[in-house]
Image 1 (tube, helix red, strand yellow):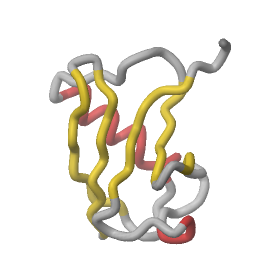
Image 2: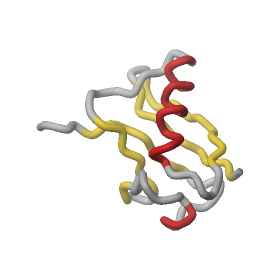
Image 3: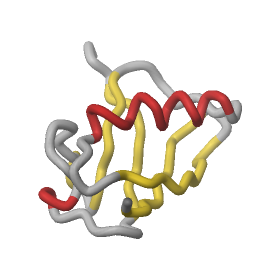
Length: 86
């Protein structure tokens, strides 16, 4: 499993969270579990809408594994919300 640094835009401010994601896993499968763990720690994403994960200024595809998108272990990912109806 590869480790990634994820920064979440939470109500309390930016929160860093280190996560392990298998090279074959897709964000669609693991992000809900990561967000659940974050909520258990008392952190909630700021804003309403769908989560978005950004790496190097590019929004990642939740249906493709991270290495397939060029993301390497220890890279920094940013998680925020995107308004679904604006």
